[in-house]
Image 1: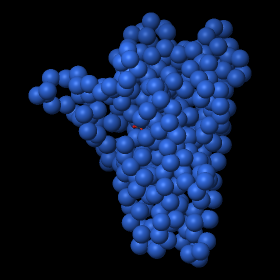
Image 2 (image 1 turned 45 degrees about the horizontal axis):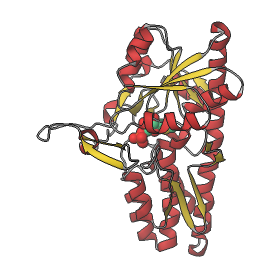
Image 3 (image 1 turned 60 degrees about the vertical axis):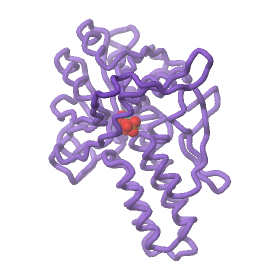
Image 4 (image 1 turned 60 degrees about the horizontal axis):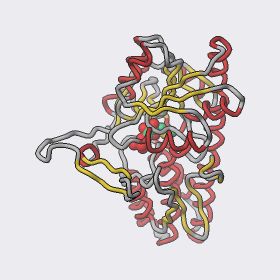
Length: 357
Ligand code: MRU
């Protein structure tokens, strides 16, 4: 998708380094950063210079290639794989990508390892782009149906950033929106700010603006009243891990939005590529929920009137705070899962049938 009119992917390999868009600097500064070592990749994931389930998976895949470039000894690759998997605990794409890379690389001659690793990382990216494009085409059918009935702008609420910045291109939750816009359907997006890191305000609103899609940032608590007033036609969110039962783990606050949608008969869709499905875990209480530094709550960063980026403390110095990064929306509150293969019920049967498992 575009930034200042120029097409980008979120990650690519060029001049022997991995290039990323540093998302901690958006929306005020657009900075492309080089990752040259596996530790650079691990730090980029931990510090959320790259974030979003599919993108951290792709970064880990390139991280393995960077490890091989540094030292193609098997012990080093194994240790690097562990570091990458442990960089963030919740999104399943991280483990998925690292396992896929290691499977591909087993039994490969050491002189071919780097070449094959780079090709596989590239393949993971290309596959994600195709999957996200299909998610867009499937989600488009839902938006078209609403538009045909309503004959007016379709208002879509989204949480966090499940946009192209969270994937390689298109996004998951945003892909149906981009496709609707390209097909001439008038859409307007309610963008949840998504405290504490404000991925909605800083990233989703930013990328929608760059594509010319009308959007309005709201606080995380506003969605409920908008639904009561009939100002939300549907919700679409992303996910970091969806269980084979259809339970959805996503950015903190998603669950409360699903409850409000349920109470107001607003369809609540979750968009995901199959790389985000956890086929093993059956009990959502077993999903590791990331707890991040409480500084992310107590401090806020922004631009002052002299254009300097500043970070300020907003809480009483002595107060404690807690920063859980994800929550779980039980399958019963999910209208449907929009996947690359089609839309299915959020249930064991729905997913089994869709993916022939
Ligand atoms: O903590 P983040 O910013 O990595 O969380 C991202 C999300 O919760 C997204 O909704 C999810 O990864 C889906 S990305 C297409």
